[in-house]
Image 1 (cartoon, rainbow, N blue to C red):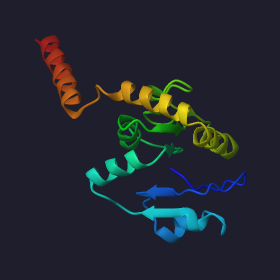
Image 2 (spheres, helix red, strand yellow):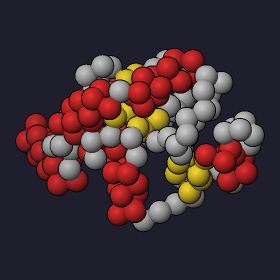
Image 3 (cartoon, rainbow, N blue to C red):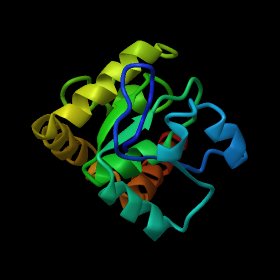
Image 4 (cartoon, rainbow, N blue to C red):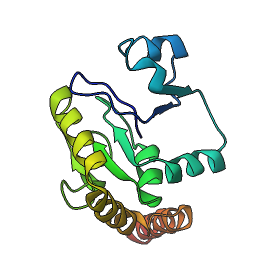
Length: 161
């Protein structure tokens, strides 16, 4: 992630907004005139292209106010991305503040900007958090999830008998 203006500074990189779910002009309208040239909006991409984007960016900013599971967070962590996340959806079970990502309060823009700035300024921290993020989710595969689901069903059937 790059190129953000939150009122604290303009980073001379780019911010990619992927899969916003609203028209590009709505997303771009959320940024100041000075920041807008640094924001790239991409509506949708195939999975392999999304994984490639994760690998080419430095930080995932995942700050929803409501979310179910949040597969984006899991995918990014699996690609060793440092993450800034709100404690919503699956984030509390995946992201440990300062261990494998940074957790910020919901709708606390200054805290969010500070966390992003901290990660962009500290490559060693990004690497450490990204490596720990990968370790935290590496066993979370579709095969492992399917096996755990079958195990739960098997236990339920045994209890019923």
